[in-house]
Length: 123
Image 1 (tube, rainbow, N blue to C red):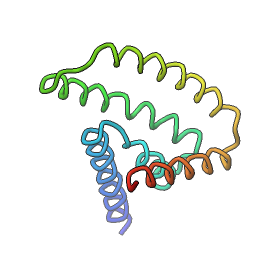
Image 2 (image 1 turned 90 degrees about the vertical axis):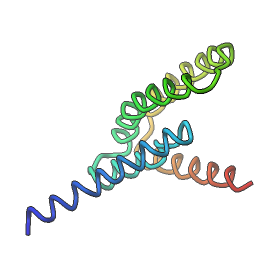
Image 3 (image 1 turned 90 degrees about the horizontal axis):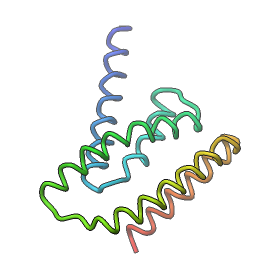
Image 4 (image 1 turned 30 degrees about the horizontal axis):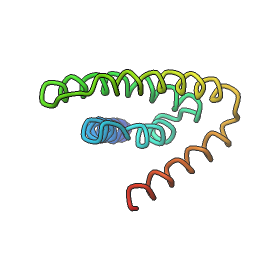
C-alpha cells in the first residue's frame, strides 16, 4: 500500500513536470504559473522557496526552447538585448522584494498575476 502511494505521488509529480515543460516550450513562458503551485502542493515548499526553485527550473527549459526556436525562426537580436537588460534588472528587483515580503503577501501577488494573465488571454 505504501509503495503504491509513493508511486502515485511520483507519477503525479512527473505529470506536472511534463506539463510545465510543455507549457514553457509551447508558449515560450508560463510554465512558472504551473510550477509554483505544484511545488507548494506536491513538494510541500513554502511560497518563497517555490518561487526561487521555479526560476531555477525554468532557466534550462528556456535555454532549450531558445535553441529550438533559433534553428527554425529568425530572432531580432536587438530586441533580445534590450529586453534582456530589463529582465535582468526586473529579476534582481523581484528577487530582492521576494526576500522581504511574507509568504501570504507573495501568494496574493501571485494570485493577482494569475488573474491578470488569465484576463489578458481572454481579452
